[in-house]
Length: 301
Length: 248
Image 1 (cartoon, each protein chain N blue to C red):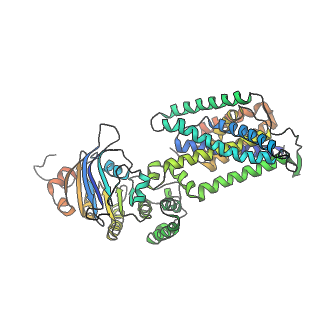
Image 2: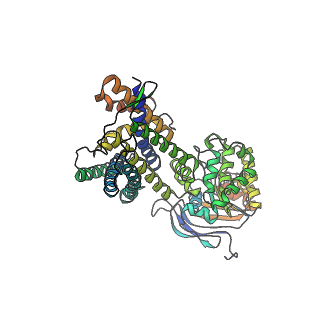
Image 3: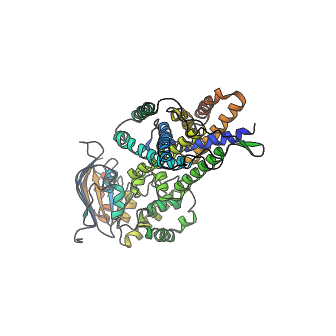
């Protein structure tokens, strides 16, 4: 039973990495970006491709580090993939969303993002087939980590990395000039302009940040489970549930929402079986919309 | 840089949000350094749009804005503050979800890195009330303190001119007096001030000169005292004194 702590924390931080991008895009650009799930899948596949390139060039770079199944090639590749996925998000904004901004109703932008989601997913299926693939075929064995808990070395490493990324994002938003600009633009664009903030540059930074974090989430999901073209799309509902639960626009809220969904999923799998996992995010989402539509940290709009 | 012409010169400005439906329709005004100029007029006269268009926040379809000897017509708003022209909007003029300190740090971003800390410290020295509440979210400040934060934020970059959209909105008469006294101090330091006001009496008491805007055009211009004492103007546009025989 205590195992739900490890499983819940793992899926919680993973959902959190994706939900931050969703909530930032929503609060700054005012639409729910359905293509965010594909940033996750794209990041995983980009990492896979780059890692196989690195292992072909550098002998031994595909061996897991210590007890981990994670190889130096995957780590290096995941960093490059974060940059590539940030580039994909920027390109999508430039080609599609920036042209609709301010001219179209929010619903047309949402539909455009839905179309982009399908297009990217189809491209991934075309390039890599819909068959699942893996970063490593090494079997990992969960070991006791004290207090009756068991975790694989990969889980411990990934939870640590995800936590570090989330703390990094928090520091970025609260301590840096670009972070202040992001929060300012999400509250009031006209005032941000008057205060000297370059709103267009800030929007680009938000896309790049959201894309990079989604890519990291994709690599983690690929390492823990498998890589599939639908991996990101299937995660979309928990991402939205976490963002809405936390109060759309609030990054700490999205993170808290992600942990609640993560633990909710883990508890449900433990008590009712794995087939109920997907229902949890749905139920929590519906409950929030009925009881507290502005979310945990939400400000009334 | 030629200093023969005034600090801010607006010539025949046409501006509005819908093409072909100008709200400001050929307005010409100017502000000298250290001068306080008020723009007055009935509701819907285009006062707010005029000031927003100058600030780069409303689309301009005709005319020219020259600031400090430089053409700034259609300069993006975030570049305007770097050119030395600051603006505080009417309502929601502080970031409520950001702390007082973050509001000021954000504004400091328009300055060179080496200058930022010094200007923030100078701003706290000039506004000690804000220094005491630097950690508080700006949304929890009182109305008067919020207006002070908005002005402090605009002054942080040491602008040559400051434009304010209804700085008295929502404030008690006592607070209006306090905010306007502050504006007088700021002007004495050499900053040109352009303010749009509904509170005609207070604005005319503060300003050196005033324009009356009607239907997007300048209808009257003059020294503030002369306008304040002109019963016809008071009755027609300013909702003030009623005089016999004046058209209502």
